[in-house]
Length: 155
Image (cartoon, rainbow, N blue to C red):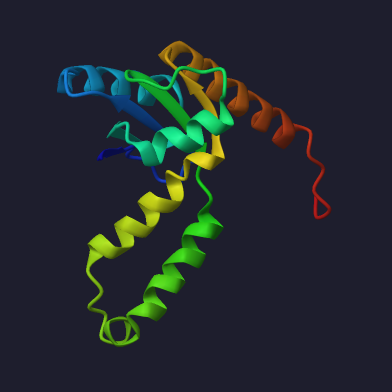
């Protein structure tokens, strides 16, 4: 999987997997990811992935009417609490390395990748980039509306 993180101060809430096949050119992924980052603020990570059985099975379960094939998109919510929990589990597995601060960064990235791209938690699966943009913009608008109408006890 290739990752592209959005340069932004605050952490975003969603990640998008762009499923490609061996015939998809790198420029296609770049064009899709740039378009998504330009249109939607709530995306933190976009990954390029080749569909595997491990990915197809949970997607097919969650979206039984969908034809799971490349080129397509999956939108997932980033569960930061679960990432922290799984990171702690991994660190406890390498207690001494953690003590000496020598756990390789790749181990942290593996944990983050596995949690973020747990396709059982997919919110949207589609073959159309515009549906991804529309869906995420709808979420952003709903969140903004909630913030504007939220009454805080401390004023």
